[in-house]
Length: 96
Image (tube, rainbow, N blue to C red; front, top):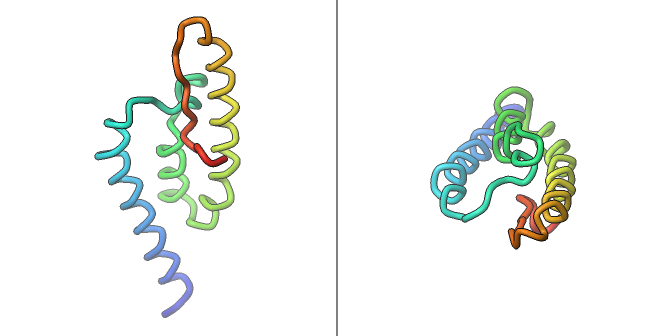
């Protein structure tokens, strides 16, 4: 199997996984992407989906950690801004 075929299959699997997450898990998790809330642009899952669809799996693997770090920073900023209101801010990237 050629490398491009393997990467294409892996990319399609990643996109399908993101679609499942965005359809079934995200609406029920009880919080929104802090990066989207702070900056008013796309969520982390939409960002990674776009990279997968328009660039490559390799690009998504390289760029996603940077985005998740930015999401973590956005969560910290929002937590500081909303600390008095009692809101709990959870980043999309819990382990990072």
